[in-house]
Image (cartoon, rainbow, N blue to C red; front, side):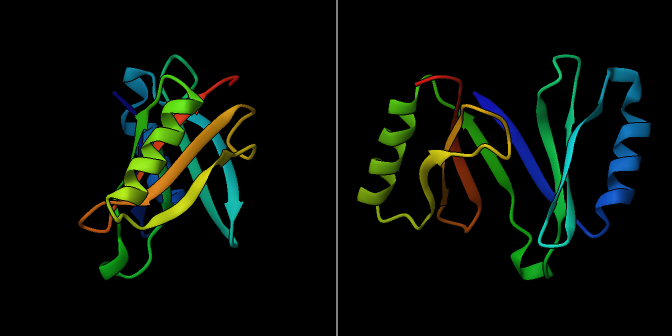
Length: 127
């Protein structure tokens, strides 16, 4: 059901070092790191190598949102989530598209839930 989770932290590098050290015994390791707007974003993974836990820079306390991504079985399902969210009056953050900065074939839609959290439906792979 859940594809990945992202939290915002005050110091991404320190938080990454903490999670990598403390959860190394259960196989947590760094899968990827990239720069966004001059700050690091880090994706941590388990034995499968897929980044499932993300650390990003925190804004102010008022905008420290949670990010949840739900697995979608197809791109059509992602598109259906988008259409349903629009019909429900949700704020669309990013319409469905391919996100090559994550990996080839990453297709997702991002929207706000009723409490302002960043919620995503994502499909990995070919159409």
